[in-house]
Structure formats: structure tokens, C-alpha cells
View: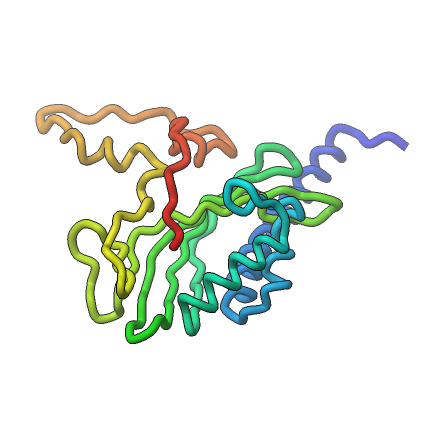
Length: 213
């Protein structure tokens, strides 16, 4: 029995909706498993051949890295998820941006953080996984010390440094580099096409270098 074009289109739309929800659940499970320190549940959200650093591959290496980071840096954490944009490159691959506001108990300080994740998702054997998560930080600072000024990444016992929150999107630097003329209206670009909003914002920019620890 062949599927008509309208039926195929409907099935594709249903699959897209189900995939969108599955990816949202994936992101929520990431936060919960991380905060509850269930590292097996956590690393199983990633593709089996996930890259860890430049040379290591696999969930076991990821588990070892996450364990070391959490055990030696934080007593407790809480990740609060915000808006989530998901765009598909094909039925089994998607990219996304997730805002996250986090809290960390770390030694004598309670560190709050604002960041976003640039995600790559992949469906394998009917299940959606993280292919990659690129964490881009705006600030990290003690709850009682607002991160005014430059070098907003201010972990206790470390020199402050710049995060990469705005580096994914060239519009940030372009906005501050030039003021519009006061005597004329600005130009407005054409809207991004469907499922190309994030790519349009990236404008071909390379991935920034990320300092995680």
C-alpha cells in the first residue's frame, strides 16, 4: 500500500512534533540527571561515540570527566532551563539553543551563572541523543557579588576571565561597532526561512573556544 503525498506530509509533520518533544525531554533529563548525580543516566543521553576532548571517545570517558568535574568543584548544583529553539537539518538531525540559569555550591561561595548551550542532536535507532553540547557562559559569580564590568566568569580562587556567551552570534559585536544614522531609517533584512533562524543568526561564524573549567 503506497502512501499518498498528503499522507506522507502529515506523517512527516507528526514525526517532527514528536521529535521536538523528545528533544525537549532530552534537555530536561540532562539537567535532572546532572543535579542528582546519576552519571549513568546522564552519559546515556549522549551518542555512544561521543567525543570527549580532542582524543577520547565514548560514554565511559565522558562519565570519568563529569565525575571529576562535579566531585572536585561543586558540592551541589541546580540547572534551571529557559527558552529552547530547535531546528531540524533533516529528520534525524537537529540543532538547538537552550538558555540555562544555574546555581552552584562551591566552597565558601554560592555561585550563580547565566549561560546557553549550542546543541547538536542526532536520532539513532529511534532515540534522540546529544551529539554535542557547546556551553557558552555569560557570567559566573557569587550570589552577593553582581558581575558588573568585564571578565564576568568569577569562580572562587581563580582569576576572572571572559565567557563566550555572545561569541556564537556576530550580531553582538556588530551592534556595538556602529550606531545607526539618526536622520534615516535603518535597513531591515528579509526574514529567515523556516528552520534557518539559528543559522541566519550564526552568519557562518565558527564555534568559539570554550573554557569549561
